[in-house]
Length: 235
Image (cartoon, rainbow, N blue to C red; front, top):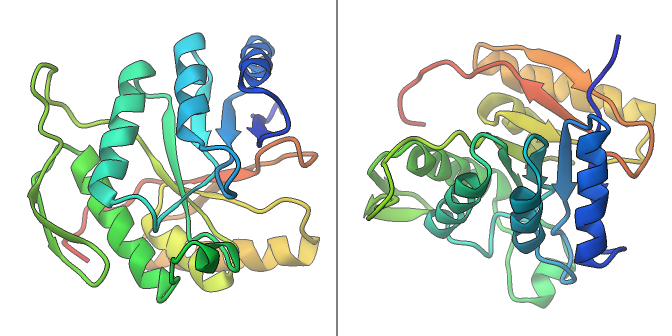
């Protein structure tokens, strides 16, 4: 059986060269490309836009942008704009970042599970063309919406994936996200624990875990889709 594979890019190549890699990957049938944004080296959004403008089929994901430094409304607007470039091909990959980098730029990663839940909930609602009022610990929105002026108002097909490492974040991912971005170069034992946590969270939301999207090396993204979420009330 042929399994989908994706390309994972960091900052090892000039952006123009990365564009050529993505075009080549698309021509060879790769399903997706993921652009890293975990260090203060290369922003993910700019090369994602370049990839979107230069391709026609390959999916394009952030692997991953942190959930702290972008307001969720601006985050939704950014990925809505990327969807304008490549409708139905953009994936919003979110992560809780890491220390000491976060601390060095003044970001306190307090209660990352609570923050991630609020941000994913708010971003999803905004991308779904909803008017959002949200009074949370980390997200405060008062009648916010993606207020399109010229273009057609429509829900944006931008799935939200979480780059999870710890088992509690992995379980939350299974519960609320559309997919997970795994770490690479980890042990089989870690993968087994991660899958168990992911399935535990998915079960809480009444859904299951799809077949894995494997990757044979650190140059390829490892991700997994989840079956659709049930329609539920506010968290």
